[in-house]
Amino acid sequence: MLNTSVLIPSQVKTINFKDIKRRNRPNEYLVCPKDFCRRAIPDELSETYDVSSGELFTWFISLIESMPRTTILSKKNRHLVVEFRSKLFQFSDLVDVLVIPVEADRSTLAIYSRSKLGYYDFNANQKRVKELLRRLDKYF
Image (cartoon, rainbow, N blue to C red):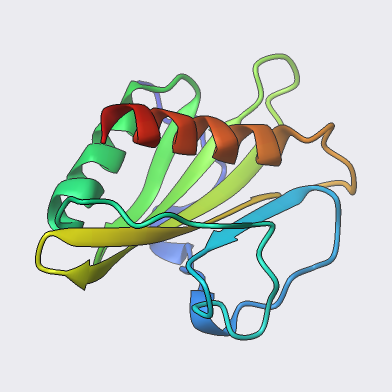
């Protein structure tokens, strides 16, 4: 896919989920395991999956690469930073996905999706995260 991102991948900073501070705007959505995001209340708690963190991370990369208007800006240490662009106006949203090992063959994740511009997004970030989780639940 053609990279149309205005962001330079080397300048992208990953979110520290343990110390994340919410912007308290309707154009963001946060999913974390219970007690993982110490400084923020998640919109939803994440499930634990019977799959290794490496397999879950690889699966998420494949999922993101199959989606339209996406650019992976960073992928290291089981942490993805992805830019999503809206179809009509090409609005840019950032999504961080952190895969967290629980045991050797069990893992969970944290996801933070937010708009880069504006205040309201017609629940686009919430819908995106819920769709990612729906696909995850369907696969695993």
